[in-house]
Length: 286
Image 1: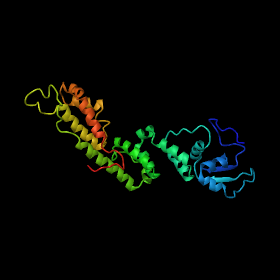
Image 2: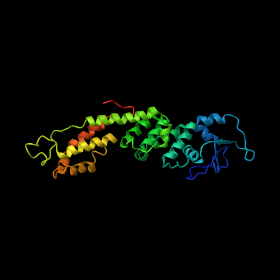
Image 3: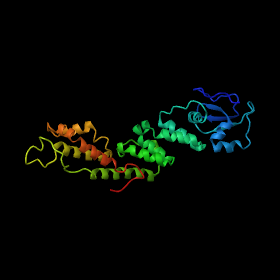
Image 4: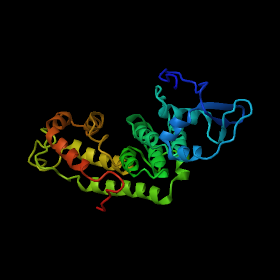
C-alpha cells in the first residue's frame, strides 16, 4: 500500500518506489523515486516501457532510467501526475519546458492542464507573441487562435524578437502578419469622415461650420489611424486618456463636453469595430 502523498512538499523519495528516473545536468544528478503504477496509468509511453524487462541497480534492486529532461521540468510534470499539491508556474520558460516533457511522455492530462495555463490572462497580457509562438510550435490551434487576438495590442515590427520564434514556421508567422494587416484595413474602413449628429457647441456654432465635424473628431481620426496601423485594436483609441488627449489637442474649450455627449456614438462604433475578425483562422480580406 502506497503512503499518503498529499503533502505540499513531496520530494519524490518514497522508500517503496519501484523505479528511479535519473536526470543528469552539468553540475548535478537528481533521482526521482517514483511508482510504476502511477506513471503507467498516466502515460501510454510509460505503460509500454514498464511492460518490458527493466535493468536493476545493484544497490537498491530498483530499475534506474536516465532521462534527458532537466530536474526542474520533470519535477513540475510529476507534480501534476501525482496526488500532491500542484506546482506553481509563474513564467513561460518553465511552462514551455514542462510542456515539452509532458508531450514527450504522452501525459495527456498534464498537457491539457498546461494548455490552459498557456492562455491564462497573465501570459496573454505580458507575452502574447511568445504564447502564440509556443502554441504554434506544439500545434495547439485553439490556443494559437486565442493568443493571436492578444497580439493585436503589440506592434509586431517593433517588438523585440523572442526565442520561440525560431521554432515557429514561416507560415504561422505570416498568418499573424496577415491578421494584423487585414484587421487594420477592416478597422480603418469603419471610420466615418463626418459622423451625423456629432456636434460641438463651439466648433459647429456658426452657419459656416455647422456641417463640419468637431475639431476633436478630426484629431481623433488622425491619431486613431496612426495607432491602429501599429496596433489594430480598439483598446487604446476609445480609452478616456486617448479621447481627452485629442480633445485638448483640438484647442476647443467645448470639445471635452462634446466627447462626453458622444458616448453612445463612440460605444456603437467600438462595438462595430470589435466585430472585425481578430484571430488567425478568421481573417477576411477587407
